[in-house]
Image 1 (cartoon, rainbow, N blue to C red):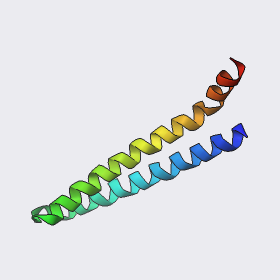
Image 2 (image 1 turned 30 degrees about the horizontal axis):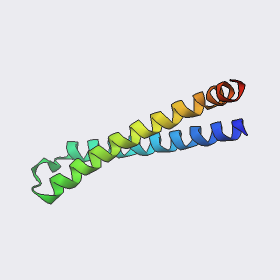
Image 3 (image 1 turned 120 degrees about the horizontal axis):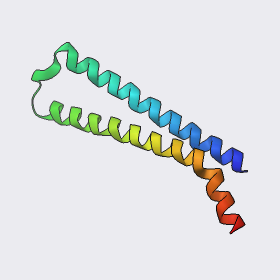
Image 4 (image 1 turned 90 degrees about the vertical axis):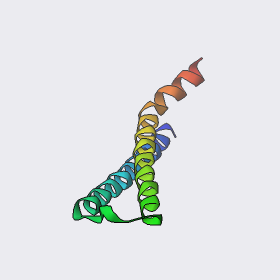
Length: 80
């Protein structure tokens, strides 16, 4: 059961991390192509997308760390 939970957390972490990287690459391409002169709502959408990409990266790293530490945490809780 511990191995299954570890794999689930690692899978979620990798999935979120990939999503964040893909979004960051897309945003970089959009910025480099010359979409810097948009006004109003488009700028807000881009800021939301940037913050979402950063959150995805952070969540992916967190899930990955939890997946690595989960067996150690469970062993510590049940052996105490």
